[in-house]
Image (tube, rainbow, N blue to C red; front, side):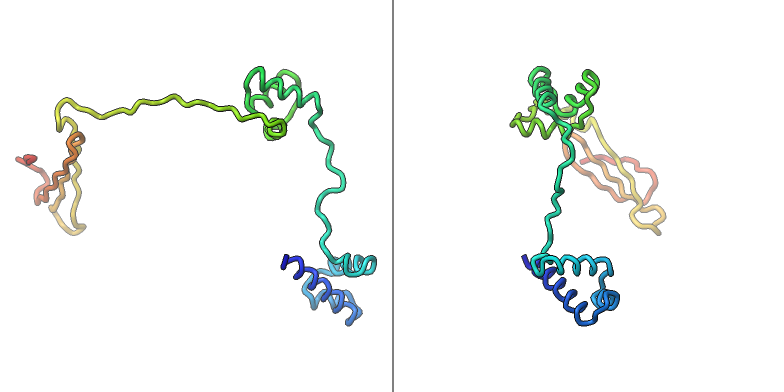
Length: 183
């Protein structure tokens, strides 16, 4: 609401400045608007006074020719009932079998206008896969990493057992790890 009042007062000020200066170019330059815009508002003000300075509706006077006829709507609903297709499949079916090109959003609007419920696709229930091994420690992951950038032989050995959820860490000065036993 405030923006409408602000626009209206700004347009009134433009007209006022124009009437004081008497020149469209000077008034437009002072207001910081194009001359064509000021000309438009001056012409509208001369015709209807202050009511003409309000915003007009942006809605088109005449809508474009509608693509969908009653026959096409009936075909869309029939295809939906018979084949249980969604909007994309109905659009493709109409194009292939009847040479009628309608976009899927248009088909969706027709279905929505007739309160057709959307298709419900059921997902198959997937069973949970458990990770079970016969022997604990059957799967072992070992990572080796240098601990410091300047350290020559300082290595960190990390061992992770997959089934037992244990972590063993060893700090070694050698490149090879001998006689490392997991406790």
